Image 1: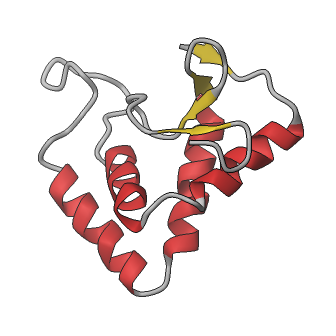
Image 2 (image 1 turned 135 degrees about the vertical axis):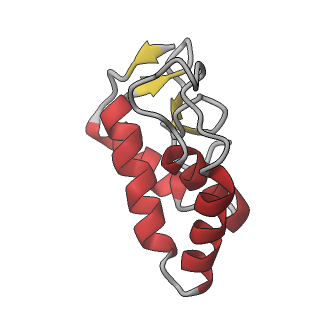
Length: 110
C-alpha cells in the first residue's frame, strides 16, 4: 500500500467513481467502514468487528432504499481521504479499511 500523492483532479475522480459503484458495493463498503475497530485490540486482531457488520450492512441498505445513497457515498469518500491509501503503483484508491474495495484515480476506470 502507498499513500496518495495525486492531483486534485485524481481525488475528484475518486469521489465520482464512488458514485459509479453499485448499491450493493456501496452498502458493503460502508458496512466495512462502520464495522472496523479504529484502535485494534486483542479481541479483534484484524481490526474488524464481525458482530457489528450485519447491523451496519442492514443500516446501509436501509439508507440507500430511503434515497440517502449520496450521504453514504460522501462518508465513504471522507473515509478514503482520511486514510489516503492506494494500491502499489498508485492507480486505485482504497475506499474501505481493508483494501478490498478500490476505485481508480482516473474517471470511469474499473
